[in-house]
Amino acid sequence: MGNDPDINQKSIEFNSYKISSKVIELDKVVKGIGPNGHTSLGIASRDLIGEEELKGYPKMKSLPDSLIDMKEYLFVLNDFQFFYQNYKQGIYSKEFFLKKAKGNRRKLKDTIRLSDKKIKSTISVVAGYAADSTVVYIVDANNNNDYSDDTPRVLLDNVMKEDDIVANSESVDIEYYDGETIKKDTQLVMITKSGNGKNISLSFRFPQYRYGKVTLGKNDYLIVAESMTFNPSIFFVKDRPYFNILDQKFKINPSQYLEIDGNYVQYTPLSQNLDKIKLTISYTDQESKIIPVSNQVGMFAPEVSGINILNNTKISLKEHRGKYVFLDFWSTACPPCIMEFTKIRAVYDKFSEKEIAIIGIADVAGNIDLKDFLADENVTWPNIHEENPSTIMNGYNINLYPTTYLVDPNGKIIATNLRWDDLNNKLELLEVAKKTVP
Image (cartoon, rainbow, N blue to C red; front, side):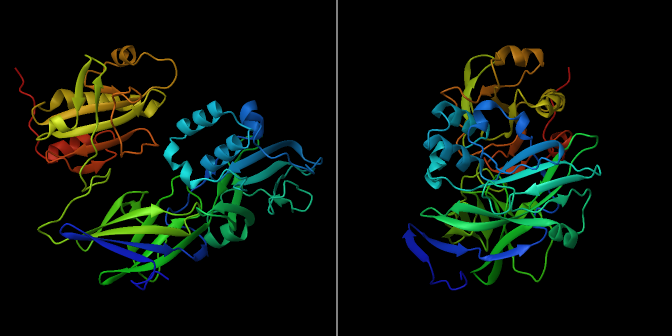
């Protein structure tokens, strides 16, 4: 299973280096805390969901009439698949699907990994107060849209021990698309209380992960994937007897690279539940080593270019080669992004423009005039409107704001997600020249 280099492997010669691909099965499933550590997710109850979106929600049977202040929830495990299948079946309009895809930062080209058939990729839960004032919830464990054959449980709070988390979890029947057919699977989910007060609010945990092994070069590696993640990332680490939380530096997103023994390994998911992935390895000698273009530390930064909204001139990352460049991907609907402007402005005013450039790439939410918005916030450094037809930012795959990159004078990314004083401190350590004070 992935350890034999001759299994599921193809290789071709390309100029002075060899490209090899392997299909790896992550066929070992573990119940417990995965590599991301303790994480939980909250969602809105059905009564807070818009009428259009509710059209795609399952109609539940046998809702318990004994619960007071009852709330219904639907946790969507794969939002892209959920909205796509409802669109293809005529439940959602094309406009609504495109709106959701854009809002969730999904790429339309990735619909090739989706099925237009109905897939059970959701978890239905109902919760309310019992007669003795305890909060009770029911999970539709067999995913048949009927609560009559499911068992009520008392809603607990602050469960932190791994054994207790697993013991208080339910295994839910789900489905996924593996690129060819719809497969059955199970998803372990734990429901706990979220927040304080009388209103019922649920928190969802998924104490389950899968892994596989592969031999690359002289070492054995573990490839680990959380069972529930909105971004299909994996962790890639040297094989060792035991681990709990893994450092985020070992985390790889689709199409990203990891350097192993001087060679570059690129990751591609092959199924929706990540039980099968592909690794593409570029074997090179040191003299002909080609560093990939990717939005990762140590790689060459993908190009960014567009029209500076402040003065209508063209700007690009490439034109600043020879300088450090700070790329700030932000949104007008992101308060933390706006709060960062004070720190960015301090850097912009402090360091020499001969050695550091700043480019903002703005996601504009709603009917907002970006130029006026920037003026109101006293932003004087160049900014690009993300949706301007001339804007180029392929390869960054931004799905969280703010996201930042620091690019060195050679065009390589040397740091990501510098927040607050991190950018100033980094430039100080790099001994970037200051502006001359009159």
